[in-house]
Length: 358
Image 1 (cartoon, helix red, strand yellow):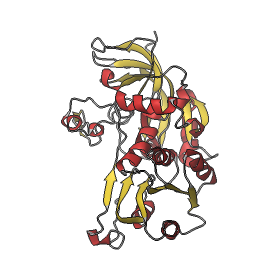
Image 2: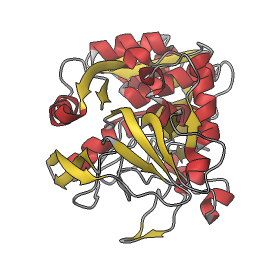
Image 3: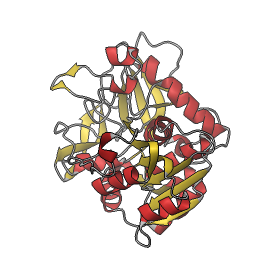
């Protein structure tokens, strides 16, 4: 077996490049995965731009599909050669946060001090998935076998964006018949739209300014799509709900403008479910916040991980209740990932998700 591999490495702000790195070492609780397909996330673009800090030399990426190459001595119930995924968030299930029911926030210390969102290790605090091989920590808690008959691309959304988008719909507390608006129909927003449909929403409104994304939103379950280039979105949503406002709004971009709009369209007592990654301070307008007296809830979610979450998501795909395959719009080999980053970061050519094949 080779001792070196190709990996996409953070060099400095504005530069992620392919480099040669040694194969990861694994401990007794880990597994070595040979990555067959991965992808680029919007969060990776924040890393590329220097908006989210990681160590120089770190391998980026947190959405792995692959095959078990080697198992640590303590890992039971799996075998080498098995097709698996691991969630973007790979909690230990031993931390205080995990045992308090918040496994995404696994927490704890690493070599460079405490980091919040501690369950997110791949491409954040340890080497990630945009490489030929990946060390999966706490493998028994985090590896999930891929059902026979599902392709890499069918399950590629499970580790992160499907889990995140669905978490946004779950955290919004959507009930059967609810009216829901999802701001931004990038990959996360599209998954939130699909999640709202699965939760039984009676009216799903999707907002974006890109025609292809509005079309895809319809495929994912939106009843009405609004193009913010054409209409005043807030007044249109209030009109569509007879002035009542929506039961829940999901913010999937991470901008002041969309966050504020998501707050303005809520009914009294409604829930704003925030999924966006924000790169500057948010301001909450006094009137939209009803001076703090509106009985609103503002909730945030990080992608739930672990093998049971991944199993459930793949079961939803296997049953045919949702098909996220159409979201893969482009394919690149790992050695050409710099080109893929350029395409994805500039949102050219109708790109939604890029499959990176090793």
